[in-house]
Amino acid sequence: MPLSSIIRRPSFEENPKLAKAAHNLSTLLAAIGQKSIPESTESKVNEIIVGVNNFQGSDPQLIKQMGVAQTAILKLVKDELGIVAKNHHQNQWLALGMATFGIPLGVVFGAALGNMAFLGIGLPIGMGIGLAVGSGKDKQAEVEGKQLDWAAK
Image 1 (cartoon, one colour):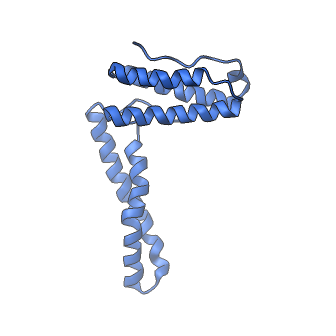
Image 2: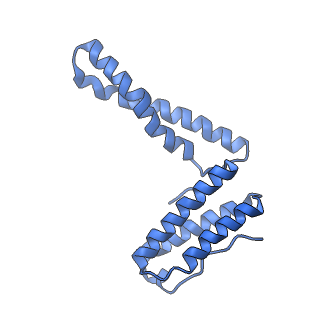
Image 3: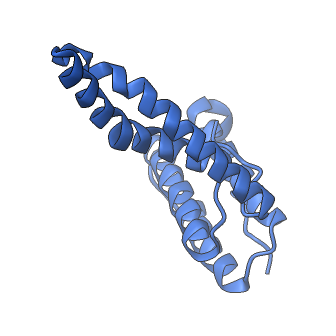
C-alpha cells in the first residue's frame, strides 16, 4: 500500500504559509516513501494524512493541523523504526549539552574564579559538546540507513 499524499486546495496558492506547511508535509511523505517501511506503519501514516485531507477548518487551523500531523509522523517513524530526520540528534543534543554540561561547567568556573558572573561561560562549551555528540549520532544514523533525506524548512 503506497503512502497517501496531500490533496491540493485552491487556498494553497493564496496563502504562502499554508503552501509552505503543505510542501514540508509532502516532502516528508516523499522521504518516508523512499524507505522501505512495514505496512502497519504505512497505514498509520495514511490515517494521519487522511485526517489532514478531510480537515474542514480555516487556513490557520489547517496550518496547525499540518504541523501536528508532521510531528506525529516523525514521532511514529522514530518510535517504530528508529528513523529520524536530518540533524535530529544534533538539534536535540544542542539543548541537552547546554543543560547537562554547560550549566555545571559554568558553576565550576564561577566558583573557581569567585565570581558567579562567569556562569555563562559554560553554556557555549556545553553547546559545543552537545553539537559534537549530536553530529556523531546523526552520522551513525546515516551510516545505518536510519536517516530521512528530509529537513523542515
